[in-house]
Amino acid sequence: MKLNNVKTIRGNQYIDTWVEAIQENKLAYLFLVPLLSFIIFLVWVPFLQGIWMSLHTWPFGSGEATFVGLDNYTYLFTWDGFYTGLKATIIYGFATVLQLVIALVAALTINKVRFKSILSGMYLLPYTMPPVATGTLWLFLLDPSLGPVFGFLTKHGILDEPIYWSTSGDTALAAITLVGAWTFWPFMFIILYATLVSIPDEYYESAKVYGASRIQTFRYVTLPQMKTAIFVVFTLRIVWNLTKISQPLQMTHGGPGNDTSILSLLLYRFAFVRGNLGMAFAVGLIFLLLVFGFIILFIRSYEKQEGNQI
Image 1 (cartoon, rainbow, N blue to C red):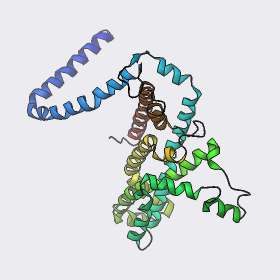
Image 2 (cartoon, rainbow, N blue to C red; image 1 turned 135 degrees about the vertical axis):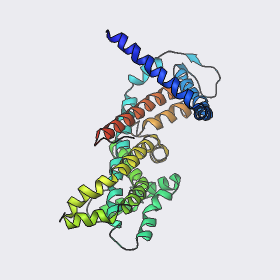
Image 3 (cartoon, rainbow, N blue to C red; image 1 turned 30 degrees about the horizontal axis):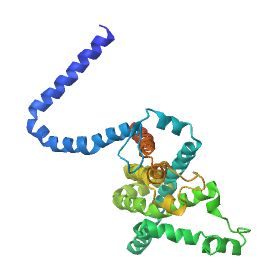
Image 4 (cartoon, rainbow, N blue to C red; image 1 turned 45 degrees about the horizontal axis):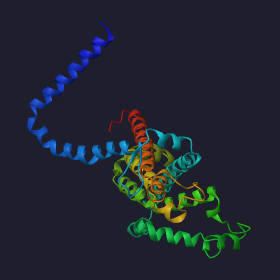
């Protein structure tokens, strides 16, 4: 039998299975109609509209859009600023690893000390601060002239002179990345700590009976029990990191040049600074595909490990 015929038969069987399932559960599928309508009209219609508008030049505030085909994409892929923003996005997004390490270490250490509730509250303080207050605070702390950070480092001989961090792309990107880690690691901490305290004591008692060391206990008891929580918070956090613009916008405005213009900030600048909504839609679509592709790869990688299914 030819391969095309096999595919046709399998396709027909698949459709028949769906039809039978709908006929057997008519009421259940009827209740899905409002949800599907919501998804179609509030998610897919705007998404398809965004794709269509990315093929136009659409000045902000104007109702007139001019069809330009793939010109917006051609411009982006031949513009150095786009690749600079893409590089900044990858570095800024994958700084989530730093947040995860800090959160995991904090969760493991706080579980061994007294006054856990007080320490947990102190840990959560950065996450409860409004983004504007956080950005303003760190602009002051990192100020080369008045801020205490470089004042302390120069006073104790660690630096010869203060660093004007906002004038260099590398230091500016490092600054917003570290501030992002300082702000958002408590979110990961609270979930990892809640997972850690839910691990039954019997597991640790069994490990102790078998003479497992602390490292072995962490590797074969703690880490496997926390694997799902780590996967969930890491995925959520990296997506939020990639889409958040408040700190880069407030601390560097995407500069110097485009060195800290992560793609979400680049989208904002095209839409509301340059006033070109068509280009903003093009950046948004590329950004969406990159994030979606990463999530799919990450989930597939997780599922392959020990037969995990999501």
